[in-house]
Image (cartoon, rainbow, N blue to C red; front, side, top):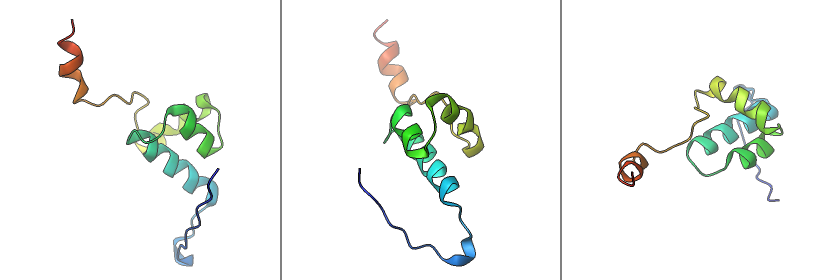
Length: 75
């Protein structure tokens, strides 16, 4: 596993656990991580991670709208 070091100003007062969860949620939302990968990054089970996605305004259903017409044409 790779390690990433960020320098964050003290006045932001960011919690490491919260920052990992936020990053995992946003990377899941963008499609860069699967649900399982994002949950692992956040340090949570898939179920627990699924439950916190709404806290970051991220939908559990991660399906790009651009895929809908293509998939609908197959029926």
